[in-house]
Image (cartoon, rainbow, N blue to C red):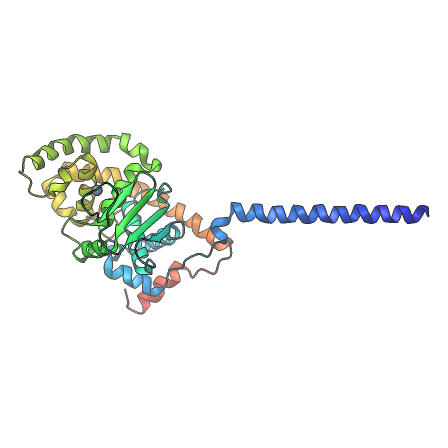
Length: 309
Ligand SMILES: [Zn+2]
């Protein structure tokens, strides 16, 4: 009788042990999933057709040297996987539109180590211009301090049809975004921005007086609009801006840590190696997680060897 009692006791203790272990394992799985949820989600992968599309529609990407194309694609891939695209007044956002929008964010932040734009998690896309409550005019693009950006797909594609006219809705909205994202706050306290701002105030007066020759009338609305428009010009007409307003060009170059006139290698040399190191670490993590992601190198080699890009 005594031994039966002991056996039952041991069995109960064992059973309890198993139950506790089971609960612990379940909790551990949930904990790991929560912490690494980013890597458990289905990751979007770039395909050769995406790179060809980008090559055809983004001059900045097209002109980059091969190592920087690789870096650009890595950033695009990472950024694409952390942003949520939400269709507005349409069924879905096309893959091409998503890639195009992401390429504009990568372009603008290419000189920075931090490029995630974490404060902007959602990107809404409307088929055409859209209305906002309380505003009489329709919008082609809007960046909200609430952490989202809205694009009109039609206006976006229209603005990239000509890539040297100084107008680019994508660059314009992401320029607003970096002024609102806390990761870049320090830039707007720095010397480069202060120099730019002092010069910009004078230019806004010229625009308002109607003596403007290079900048849009809308850019005279306020300092934020003038900043966004200046960044559009910096990328679309860098030579023109540098020749006519060298001080302005230089301060934006310092602010964004890149020089688009050097199209193949626009990154400022003092930051580029750090950036390469940073991205290699991300590559490694991607490899360690075991995701079957086709290497950007393989993708690019394939496109190069086929004379596609
Ligand atoms: Zn604006």
